[in-house]
Amino acid sequence: MIEVLGAKTVRGVSNAGRFGRFVWQSIVACARSSVLSRTYPLIWTQMHLIGVRRVPVVMITGAFVGMTLAIQAYDQLVIMGLEERMGQLIGLSVVSELGPVLAAVMLAGRVGGALTAELGTMNVTEQIDAVRSMGTDPIRHLVAPRVLACLLLTPALIIYADLLGVLGGFFVSVTLKGINSQAYWSFSASAVELWDVSVGIAKGFFFGVAIAIISCYKGFHCKEGAQGVGRACTEAFVSSFIAILALNLALAIISKAVYNTFWPVRSLL
Amino acid sequence: METGSEKNGRQATESDGLLVLKNVTKKFGDNVVLDNVSLTIDKGRTTVVIGPSGCGKTVLIKHLIVLLRPSEGEVYFKNRRIDNLSERDLNKVRIHFGFLFQGGALFDSLSVAENVMFPIRQHCKLTERDWVDDVIKTKLAMVGLDGFQQFYPANLSGGQRKRVALARAIALDPEVILYDEPTTGLDPIRSDIINELILKLQRELGVTTIVVTHDMTSAYKIADRIIMLHNGRVIADGDADHIRNHPHPTVQQFIHGQVGEDDLAVLRASTAVSKAQFLPRDFEQ
Image (tube, rainbow over all chains, first blue to last red):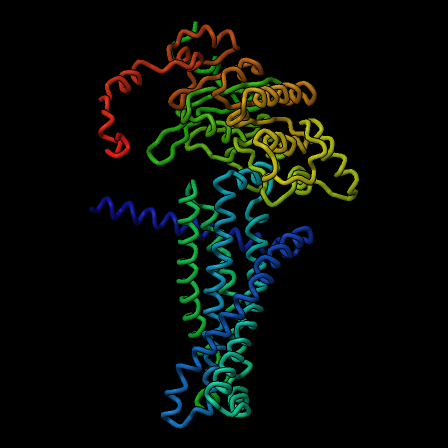
């Protein structure tokens, strides 16, 4: 039993070290690629695949989040006579938490899965070895454009998700529940500060990088065969999902601490 | 007079040959795939590595370009040790090599022209588009596929894919071309086309060629030197006649395609199974 435990520990540490080295190499490759103009076409291509094609699904996600939140919250607010403040609740919830997290989870499934499948297939068909055999760094050529594309586009997609979330909540609140539309927008605008919007969007940078690096890592190190690639896709999504939740918690703690430091009076109101 | 376990003739030193493997051992976990292999590859000649499936041929050839690093031992290219170089330094060495992978390893999302252009784009300044188009045309013409520039790998046959992969491998005019089972999966005629291409490139480009194969017809046709691997060790090393007349029984079994007595005994020992054990009753009726 000790031998089994020891072997698992050694394997775990080895995998953690391998992942850490991959992250470092990816960061260095991204820094180099961002100033090399010949890599820009690769980045544009990935931005189109990752960003442009994902806008509809992210908008749908945001819209349904807002609508569902409005339906669930209305009854609770009516009890307290606060239904006019629906815009405040939906705006804050969507912009600071639900929009970024659920949009990122959607991207982890769609984009992350696609990245892992593509790179995993390249791995098992020796295309990554072919890149190396031609004197090219596969992390600079394959990983960096994808990470940079996710870094730049995830915040933009979160903006779409937030917008549709607020609009979805508006639709349910005003059209179905009969809340005054002016009240909805007024309370929404007063509650949602620029800080909340900024934190929500900033989360997108971290979520995007996490999704891209984890997905690319799983693709680069998947086992042989269709089963290996499939398993890597599943692992990539699960790992990305956990990373998103962990990063969200960490960023929430940090942003709260920063806010309380710079605006201590406002935080008490 | 060769011993039963032949060790490639002479002791490899870093001053001999274009490529040298010195006491290379490669392990994957507890599995020893290459066991203290020493080889010297001479410049300008065609060396063929043969052996049964799983004996370590592909692992061996990947060590020559350091796609795999040895667990023990050293690899030299032009008297310079390369197995301990960083990936960044290795990239400068690898441009002297062309590698034809077993499945071709073409990039699915790129056209034939873009595949061939890939190494050129990575390592050359592309100031004139016409020059690049001419180079691509020349490389594809060498493998008999000029006119296929706009095709994608999915639209090509297996033999065509290998030829495009070969055109890509020679795009930077390498000094060494490595072939990993170039005729596997091809019919006899397409296999012979690949053999002829290997000979043609050898003649016209003067490259050093290393081929890994278990196709003896191909080996006899193209090889100046044949090396046989078995259980991770070199057990035969010489020209075609030397291999044909080699006294080692494993070598004779392999080159004649004969199953060994041990394997035959296993096959004969399996119990005959009656039809009733497998076929459903209604099928029998």
